[in-house]
Length: 156
Image (cartoon, rainbow, N blue to C red; front, side, top):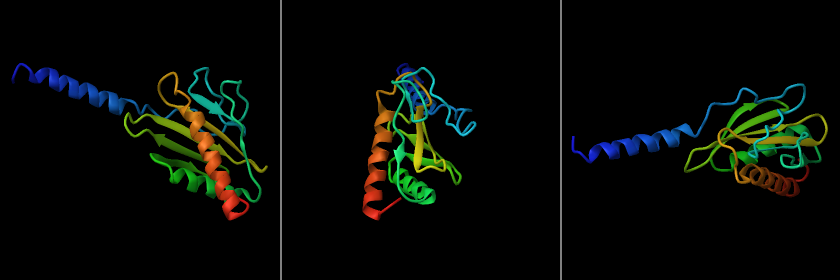
């Protein structure tokens, strides 16, 4: 082996570990617990519409019409966004993974459709401390796209 080949191999291995290590393991707290989404930790890489302090709170989405149509509309919105994969869907819950294009970071996004005409949401990064507002921006974009579809198609 050439003397300068070893640093190159180490660099390639390190880059691979960074790229593939950013996905993290799926958290064990995904889903509903007693009709509520899991609260955010104290890290600033999560937002939630069910409770939460000022830093973590985001308003839920409200809609008119049926819950099933609202769920399908949210599903269509997220499927139209880059890097998404639906992990779990029930008649009142949706869990979606969002994977960033370059670093392959994974964020877990959840939607809860209780009987009221409201969609509770939670978005949290799997790894790291701060997300630089990415989760909040994503949910606000989903809200905007949902509302546009609702206005265009009538009631969701």
